[in-house]
Image (cartoon, rainbow, N blue to C red; front, top):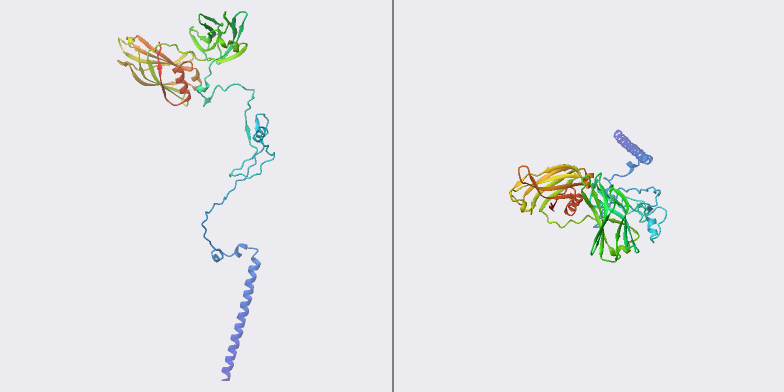
Length: 421
């Protein structure tokens, strides 16, 4: 009994000491664990932050009906451009130019206002402004589109002359000084003719012939007698003529003025544009429908001979066998000839044939097309029914059709052309 009691007491004391030992060890372990995060918090701050997955209770989510505006993620930095070095009086700063017109001058320093857009620009931009008092008064006579001449680039011949009326002699002296913008072939000569038209008489005078170039000088005088003075009904016409090796005269242009304007024009230098001469009122021998186009990339001129109408019937009594002959000319030189097929027994023939001609674009302004309607009157004999010409040297529909072709490259343009003998 005594032994049993001692065993129970010993077991109880052993158990108590074991429990106390375990408690002490657990306290020591806890103190060690608390010390480690405090010492390593500075070394690894990311591990000390609580995880988002395990701390969702720290956030409060609220619903809102307001639209969500996206935030700009990228911001373009402001670019400061270097200030230009102004070396010409025609390059000015726009703020300074505005201040000259009465506006407030802008500060000299760069603008500090924020830009509204993403790309920032400097306030010291420059603008090139052509002054109205520039000394370069040469007109822009040629507008080239991809190297192609347009109708705006057509240069009409210009004539420079002066006139003086002498009251004591009752004479009108016209001094022909020079002419420019002439487009003629090599070896051509030319002169200026003056015609004074009065109610009862007509007087003519002309200069000597000179070798024609793009700029030709005469400095010669034309004298017209006016017994009744210049305050009468009358007109003066000055025309420029050219003649080639074959003595073929061509009227390059004409200008007219009334005698009553002599007092206003006296003792003054006059520059005038010569206008193409008017077509004489001659009954046409019919009409020819043509369609033309120019392909700048291929340097090709396309001509479609479509049909004819109104041909003179008195020349088509025996046989009707019609064709059209085409000739491409550069100034006075024929470059190429082509002819359509023959159409028989039809007073209004239809051909609808296309002919392609190679013409460099720089030669278009001095090239022309001559077309002639022919009738095969016999085995060899061909009779001409009428002709027409297209080009900048032509007149009326021939000039108009060529101008429209130059203004509208790669486009087919059709037009009726009267035929003349």
